[in-house]
Amino acid sequence: MNTLKSVMLLAVLSAILIWAGGSIGGRNGAIIALIIAGVMNFVSYWWSDKIVLSMYRGKEVSQDDAPELHGVIQELAQSAGLPMPKVYITPQEAPNAFATGRDPDHAAVAVTNGIVRLLSREELKGVLAHELAHIKNRDILIGTIAATIAGAITYLAYMAQFAAIFGGGRGRGNIFTLLVMIIVAPLAAMIIRMAISRTREYGADRGGAQICGNPLYLANALRKLGQASGRVPLNVNEQVADSTAHMLIVSPLFGKGLSSLFSTHPPLEERIARLEAMVGGSSI
Image (cartoon, rainbow, N blue to C red; front, side, top):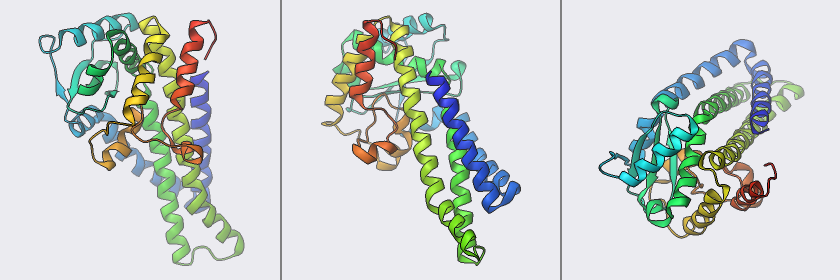
């Protein structure tokens, strides 16, 4: 179900791109915008592990450095049918974790100092299983595709601004189309991209629960992480937090009401409720 939702959202995002390209630059305009966004996101996708780990000052740890952490990840990776990823610890005291890498053979799992100290072994197992589910589901690839299409729509919106400034929007119909392109299309693309991210989080929660064998491991971990994240800042600059929020087990950016439309993560209460429902045999 989560995969179907992601496919449908990507289809809507693609439809916005096709409409925007046809309205502003025609087919060639859409292709040019897609190529520009694609090149930028290709670089991000191919070297995402090095880029993100550098942002968080992650240090790779060996079996000797962190035997318990390595042991848990190795056990979970075998359960998931995945190669053993590289293991990193970052110096942040805020409890969090993320997975990165372009595919299961080039994956890395990173945890902060804070999460290792905060969680029990079972809760940490739930978090690490969630991150391995992201790797197994190739969520980094899906996120990159969504970012590429959304980026292309944003470039087309810039083209619409230039068209409006330099007289390309003569006529009431053209002016209306340009306004929709400048304001509505990028906003809709961002909302849909965030919706895809939230859908993938639900999928990783479910997959992680199956990998570790007990949904309550992750549910209890999320409850603790939600309580701690509001108290302990992530200690990275705002730009890094904004650009990497979708990768973390819990978002460092909190929003309620209308602002939740732009959140990369579903509400923690809903994630916990769905995990607890799995114990009773309900589907999520």
